[in-house]
Image 1 (cartoon, one colour):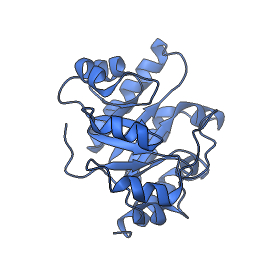
Image 2: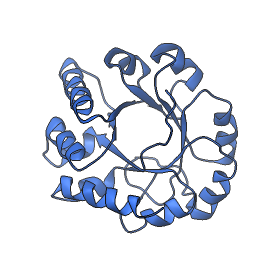
Image 3: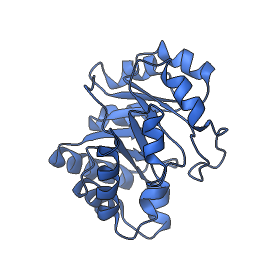
Image 4: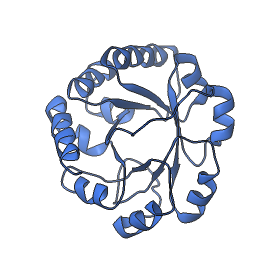
Length: 212
């Protein structure tokens, strides 16, 4: 799956972040999509039980109804099962391996954190690359070193594929990230810091649409 342009706002439906706030997955996904998101990644770092698979299918259906792209984090097998794209980390399958599982038409993204990883990733059959953390983040237990805006700008010149910036991005610094060359920004923490998720998403979309 090749996108003419990756959506600028790339929200991540993080199960831990959602449940730690006493929220439910499907209603949160509904609010994110109603706010104007056109891509949504499902992220879960624990066990995939039957109940969770039902929730994944719910979110997939919500994305289909909204005309949004649905992406699974890490799991190419589940992405294949539910007809989703897949986003891979450095400890997951390589994109070429995930492509064999998810299929030629699946959207595949691949996270990188330094120049060496970027150079290797460029040779992989990924549709887009992610790079970061641009800023400090609390969404990972053991985050990679912060790369900063200057390094993002330098890496941008090396990458022809769409580039997603990740790590510590907020509404306050998002425009600087786009200005440094990112095509899109992935968001977890700032999204769930708001009591009104739909309004938060609308604000994100407005900010990024005004940052051309």
